[in-house]
Image 1 (cartoon, rainbow, N blue to C red):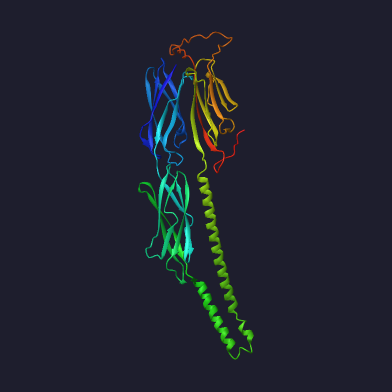
Image 2: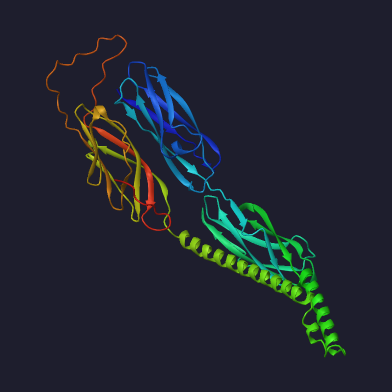
Length: 443
């Protein structure tokens, strides 16, 4: 008994975040009513709101059924633009060895999105101040970004200057841009004045957004310091007047025993100490931000983790009894599951090996998917091998098989010479070195 299935996907380019419908046709070329189990394979099975188990569909002999499979592409920067291959596993209920795995390709389009953030919502300064803008490309394609900074109030005595006004970010990449503000017209006394500064971020197709923060312009002499200076001046004048008066020579101690002088001086020193501590904390924050930016810049060029899915086919009819996949350089392959299907004569055997380790060896009648009982990894240049041995061994002992006498089922046609096995490997490629590397927990 054979199964024929066809998977049809739209040829249009589908942008992430959009939905599409894939059509599956299943033909029943046998002489009995049969049902077929359907299971989605590949990356779409891991997408949110997507069921990998598509249920089963009954098909009458000589007819076919059409199944519509709705899919929604996630709006994620890890979904790279370009062709995306997936498949549907179609298995007969009446004959578990009758399997088809049709494949289809979706053309994933590009989308651009930038997420800006400010390191500090509020800064202080007498003559100048600085801030950092963090930009993250949350789209799936390289995007050119434009920056422009200006005070929200045209009368503000400030001149902002960006270190970079144009830059290009890859998908998932982050960057930091320094923004300095110079005070054109400083104030000498009074209270701090808040000025709002907006940073406009624009990218592809005229998209843009604005983030803002507050620059508090401080005077040279704040009110507490001015009051302290006035009090100190008054005390100094009083002391000088007492010193030069006729009483000054007789009671010199009165010039140094002022109750107000020492207390006001301590207040001024305490204010200066607090101001110095704030300036020191601000400088330390800027230094930490620059060091973090350098670390992120180093991590941007490193290898990243990425999902993995490939298909291996061993076919003795094409004189290809074995198929293998070799792990790419700089990566290790962490295997999640291997979905197996095969067809051929009884007694044929399917072998699955990872490097020198034999993972599974089973008869073609007992074929089943392989899921590692413990974490399983292959390092770079190691191979995952699928092999099929089509040598049929007749059963020994027991009565000879007799044909079925059921009126509702026909005798299956003998399979064609040779045998075929297919393995769909799903897992993840993890860098061996760099910031995205992970410890290998496999046995």
